[in-house]
Amino acid sequence: MSVPQHVAIIMDGNGRWAERRGQVRTVGHRRGVEAVREAVKAAGELGVQYLTLFAFSSENWRRPPQEVSDLMGLLKFFVRRDLAELHQENIRVRVIGDRDSLKPDILSLLTEAEELTKANTALQLIIAFNYGGRDDIVRAARKLAARAASGDLDADGISEADISDSLDTAGIPDPDLLIRTSGEQRISNFLLWQAAYAEFVFLPCLWPDFGRGAFEEALHIYQCRDRRFGKTTSQDLALGT
Image (cartoon, rainbow, N blue to C red; front, top):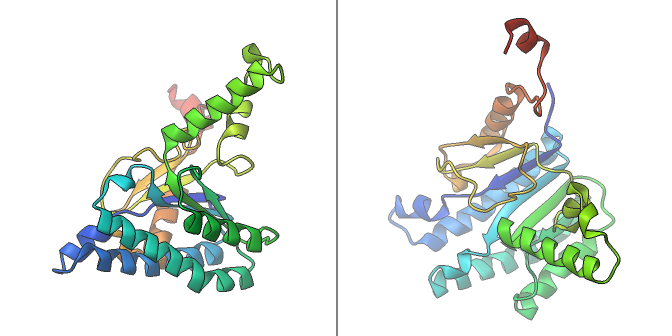
């Protein structure tokens, strides 16, 4: 059966995982980093070509300052510890999200990861950091407006392809499957344009408990779906639906 080319994941439930064990939320975030490693490994082994992880949303800055600081520290730890291994595994790292407001040390770290791995040809790991779907569309609209104002683009001729090419994910195929852990059933401002035809799978497990088994479960659910993209199947025609 078919394996989705592009899987996107909302990694939800780190804090609840820790709180249910009587521990501080940071412990859950640390365990979540281990789940990231499991997901990246599983994606490569299962034949997924693009894996997008919602690491930090533009709304996450509203969390308590100490939690935000801990999350930034974990990001640095992950990149510094795992970048060499990702590179050795021929994995390409790409980052999407608004970079203008990032601190220089974080921006430098993300840029280093992209530059080191840009020629790699195995799994593409896309990290959504300081990312919001609406913000992505707004920034794309500004780019197109600037092009139209300069005469480089006919505003009346703007197409869906023009918008897609102006988003952070330009050159990356839209996700086929979007997974969210923790049982929540919403996409929380993630890849709003890109997920128009994605299959959504909501799993009850919290992110730190996500492993290969959960990944395979989500792929099985995806493979049982009938992806028609607005078309009808022969069965539909026979039933008159």
